[in-house]
Every structure is written in C-alpha cells, then in structure tokens.
Image 1 (cartoon, rainbow, N blue to C red):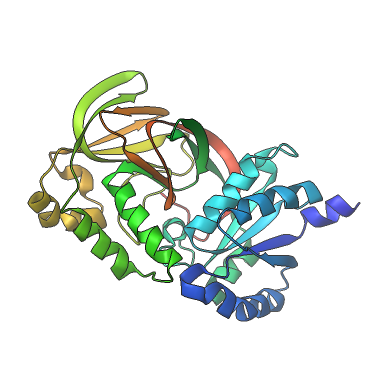
Image 2: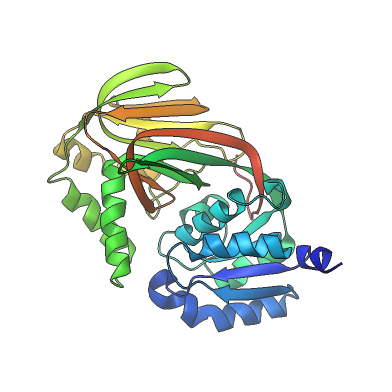
Length: 316
C-alpha cells in the first residue's frame, strides 16, 4: 500500500548549487508553485557531485517512480544514472520531469520546457509523457573501465576539453554561458587534432578528428546544435564527426554550431547508428550531458524507449 502511494507522488531532487546558487535561493518559490498547482511531492537537496544518483537509487527502493530534476543538465544526468543503476524496477516504470535552474538547460530546450518556473511547473501538471531513448558510454578512467548513461548528448575531443574547463570553474562558483564560450575560444589555442579509428555499426573510418558528438538530443553548451537532427525516440544515435580542421576555420564557422546547419560543412560528417567505438592515438577525454568523465577507448550505445519523460513540445 505504501509503495503504491509513493508511486503516485513526485520527488524533487534539488541541486542547491545549480545556476550559481539559484537552486537553493529559488526553491521556496518553486515549492510554492508546485503547491499552487496541486502537485504532490517530497524533496531533498543534493549535497555533493554524484549524490543525485545515489539518492535516486535509494528513492526507487523506497517506492518512488516519479522524479523532478531541479537543477541543470548535470542533475538530470545523475538522476538518469540512478534509474539505470538500480535493480528494483524496470526503467520504464520511472518518469522524469525538469525544472531548469542551471546555466545550460539544453535538454529542456529541445522539449520547449520554459525557463520561467511557472511554465515549467505547468508542464509537470499537464503531464504530457513520452518514452525517451537513453544512451550509454563504456570508457576508461586510468586503467579501469567505467560506464555512464546519458539522455542528451555525449562527446569526446575538443568539446570535452571545454566542458572540463567549464566544470572546474563551476566548482569555484563561476558559471554562465559567457564562460563556456570563452573556454571554447581559449581552448582552440592549444588543442590538436587526434588520429582515431571510428567504428560505426561495424564499419571503421580512420581520421584525424577535432571532435565527435553522439546525441539523443540536439543542443549542448548553452544552445549549440552539435547533433542538429537527433530524435529522442527513434532508437538511434546521431553522430557528428568534425574531422581535422584549423583554428581559423573553426572560428569562421562558429555560427554553424548554433544555426543547425553544422552538417553542411565539407569537413563535418553525420551518421545515424546504434553503436560507435572510438580508439585514438592519444587519449581523448569523454563527457556526457556536460559531465566530465574519463577517456578513450570508448564505446557508445543506445537503449530504445528506455524511460518516460514529461515534455512541453514534441520534437519533430
């Protein structure tokens, strides 16, 4: 009886540090809006990096199946990893919604989830639901193999260097879109293209690469469209490979990262597949949903229709 009751109740996983402390500062207003809309919920603040994953696993064991991510894309990623590293219930029994508080909020951008709290809470109340694919990465951290799940976009190469720098600054309390863009430009000075073997559904391509992105979603880095045609429910991964390219060429074509025409560039290739393996001459760093991980060799895969999400606008 208790477990059935909890399955009908939302649990808000709140990152107090999201958006330079907006998670903690704005929670009272968000809670008031949830109460106003008659949404039944409990809540808890996360205490450190990775806590949302542990918390979600514990909550599922306690009977919860519906989660509100109050934070940025990193908080959402941790909740997803909690759902996919538990054995209490099928992942399709779980439902995720989001109230964006972070600086990027790229996953919600694709589904029309408003940045205004009133709008985001209304989306939860209206409860439009779809089954969303979830990706995973097998990668290395030193000599140890690890696994991470992602709901939006993962990648390696240049993008991961920028993410790593940005995350380091977030830990020091510095976080906004301008910092990400500055890190993007400053990282161009020292970054080198790396010779890699990319195997896409069994077919291997050899190339020096600038970056590789793998997406269920279309946006990352605060609005860049690295996988501009990705669909979250087609059972496939969209892969964007930027082959060897010069610094000046990158700067000249930055607008392509934002306007959805990235794949029109002659040195950028797009693929759609279910499996990607990357081996590189030197280690390439890996990130998922804006979270810094380990390095290559890495393998990306997809779990179709893996978890329920609440959305505002259907992706077409």
